[in-house]
Length: 285
Image (cartoon, rainbow, N blue to C red; front, side):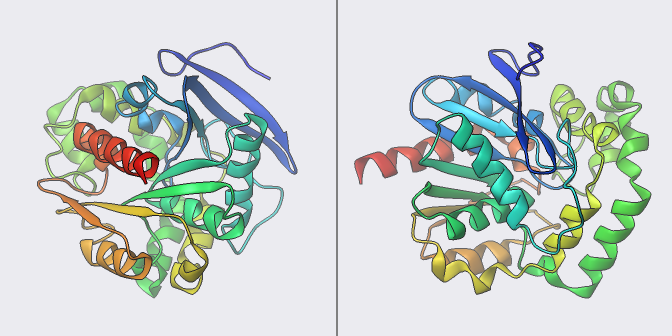
């Protein structure tokens, strides 16, 4: 099913009926498949500055996670991220886009890890961009995620997304926590980050599942090659987490100087180049 409205130039918005509701996603590009998975509180259009470049040589499938963007929430509260991984895999299956490499940002990295552990034959490789999950399991993180999920401050900012994103002081106010240089953040990218929260129906379930998930228990089930990609100035998911993932997955860690947590919007050029390099390494063996 499609509503015919492009969220990104060259991409089509589609829907898939799954158990408990609909998953909305973007599809576009041509070539070998690639799946992109956004983070907590985000949506598919968070890949605005990365996806069009990758679509030059790849067929992309970019879901809104359940409860995010235009996707329905899960039918009932979940204590694990497996249903989120299953939703992403179902969309990729429906698009005949498996097996494929997965690129996940923040929560999306952890969801992609769950997908790789559950269905190793479906996931050819993993790019973990500031993947959540290791330091997210602390009591403080649990409290922060719960408060944010209940209070939902992003909805208020999202109602004024255009004004905030096009104001230097607005970007500083909205993104002090997530990027190294909020004033320098591209205004259209800032708008893409802010437009999701007013659409969200349930980010609390994903957040609560995130903070009780310890990926280290499943990393030995991940068989595919991986790349860990981190902002040097990430205060939300620290580089130490990237080192831990890299060590356990026997994967390289690439650190982006002058970059915070929202690397896919702050340094999309470097992120895109790193993804391309990784995909080329998969093809050349």
